[in-house]
Length: 185
Image (cartoon, rainbow, N blue to C red; front, side):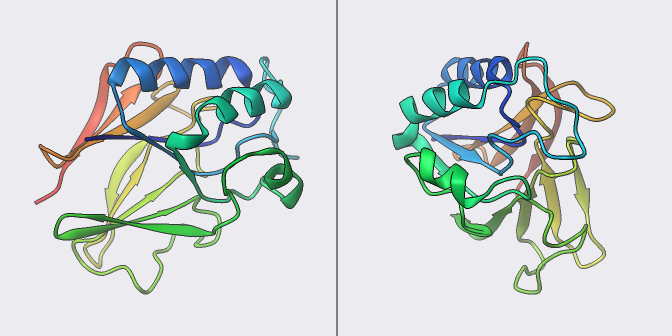
């Protein structure tokens, strides 16, 4: 099965549509959203495609395939208009012999929660910077970047996990070309 990870839509309907198209193109079975779904936030400019009601409609169509965690720009009012849970601070995803912890990233301020062990994986958004890093304690941190407001290089991205190959791949939203990868061992 393929899992699709995306973060930081920030109410941008054009980005949400591109994410949905990539989800379909990839043939993924589940969509994991890492927070900041509808609101652009007080520190960000309003995205060119800002249409939170349109994003609500699009995500509502996909509700049966979505699991989500809360971002720093998500609030109870967002939960009232979305038909799937978004208020959990984190989720735990067993991946064979490993465990992936999914969170937005704002609660740990670049750190790693204590319950994450060596060999486990932390998947988070928040920074809008796609990439793979490793902590001194042996935890791999994966960030799919932002589908609407990427910072630095690369452009807007998402991440795929393929259960058969145990491979994570961060890909460009528009083309699907791979930016970087991480293979679980």
